[in-house]
Amino acid sequence: MVTRGFSSGRKPPTDADARIPPGQYLEQGFPVLSAGPTPHVRAEEWSFTLKHGPRPIKKWNWTEFNALPLTRMTRDIHCVTAWTKFDTAWQGVLVDDILADAGIEPLSPFTLALSFDGYTTNVPTKDLTAGKAMVALLYEGKPITPDHGGPARLLVPHLYFWKSAKWLNGLQFTERDEPGFWELRGYHIYGDPWREQRYTGDP
Ligand SMILES: Nc1nc2c(c(=O)[nH]1)N[C@H]1C(S)=C(S)[C@@H](COP(=O)(O)O)O[C@H]1N2
Ligand SMILES: [Mo]
Image (tube, rainbow, N blue to C red):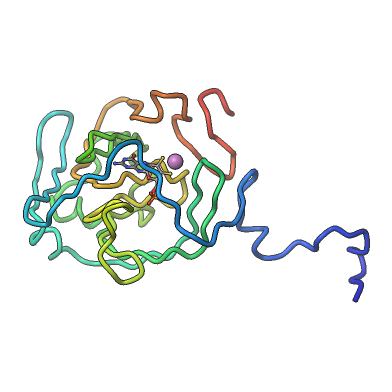
């Protein structure tokens, strides 16, 4: 069958094409990308600290953190190494609900995500609030496996996936946009996949 307008051999645009940012391909698996070895953090030794600069504001242990409201987020994710995965299904605690439990509004325009492996990544605070990001605890209904960042990882699905810090143990409000691990090594300070902000200097 020849579809009028697409008889030249080009594929007609599909709904899927519209969901794949420029330069990305659709991945069916779930690749693991880590800068170093996988830390194995047991629930009993896990904690999450909200900080304003060096000053801790509030700290939750695993039991306390799991008592916070759980929200579902099903989103497409985009890794800078060019894979896009559709409809990844997470449950976790919205950053909004963490701030509410601490009894605070955002304390500065920028936030640094902190991880057990020493990894950091910077995100403007407004990209973490208003339902945009969560600390994910479950992937497809099950605890997140250690290689994908369990017990808990940040999920900021509208930015390249390096912003979704695995093995998360804190969020730190910072006055300036302080580059994190990959941002110090040539990756874009913001990382919007729809604007193809892969490397430092990309528009
Ligand atoms: N703590 C920590 N978080 C991390 C990383 C890391 O090395 N350490 N790698 C980042 C990168 S570059 C990507 S693409 C995603 C990969 O997540 P995945 O392994 O679940 O696919 O995690 C991000 N979060
Ligand atoms: Mo990555």
